[in-house]
Length: 419
Image (cartoon, rainbow, N blue to C red):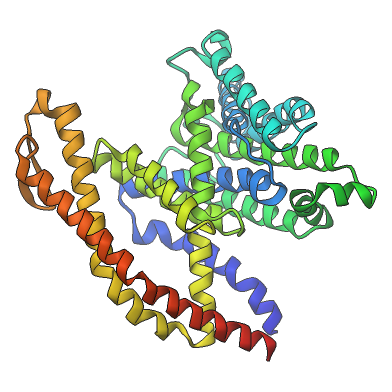
């Protein structure tokens, strides 16, 4: 019973999160954000099948997301024109099959090699498809894209998926099914072979399996689930354009996966939620929001390679061992300096953004953290620089306490493991 409960608990928690999210956050903006999060969870997990599971760093994964979305939106328009009784609930499967078809086509070429060669081929394919989107206007619709109307398709149990809440439930159900399917795939012998190809492809060849064939199958599965995400995006937004399959979208899914943590199945889920939330809300607060994403990515890669999931799992293990209380005093010592350094860095970024990009149009006066500042005067710059430098120096000076606390925690964990 304990083993069954341990297996069911995460899935019940995920189902409860999907069920409670629209009840707790029910505003139109929140519903839209939750719908986008569901789509991005599938997209990020599909990318992690390549990066985290098989060790393939792709710079063009948005191709299968975008092409799946375009095929899905053309299928919706064809259903509307032909007055066919196809419900909108099955359209994501059309996107998935389209992603699979293109994954087989492009994967046959790109998975012949791994490592840097694979990454460069994926980048080339991505740029090829992205540039073709402005040439093949009949299919891609040029700069304007292709639009549709999901409410004109056949209803399901009386639901025509016009209101956003109905679309959210459709995305939530598909997201839950895809998460379960991708997790199940990681537990199969094929999933273990993908991990073996990631860690030691020569040994996989030695025991009689083709590393290239395993990469190709994993690539095809990843393209299939990316196509499902693209189909759900087509339903949610009722439009697809060239940006959905370009380099920027591929960079976003890479960002989500790394920030969440490529070494954990839950990592891309956390990354999709974090990045989507910040993407929607930061853009309303600052014009330099993309710079913050870049700095966050650099910080995660440099200081927390396990991502958000890695940090959570480390603290969870510390809490289970009873050693978590040792970390509290150490964190309390470095928290003021770290907060000061972050505030100073944010102030410098916003002052630079105001002075260099917006001062001529809107003037140098600005408000930051509730204070009125003038970006053209020296005082705000000096204050922000002093705050960042002093906070960084204090953090560096006191960080030894955090290292000592974690050394004690890790020592306790190792002793508990031996016992």
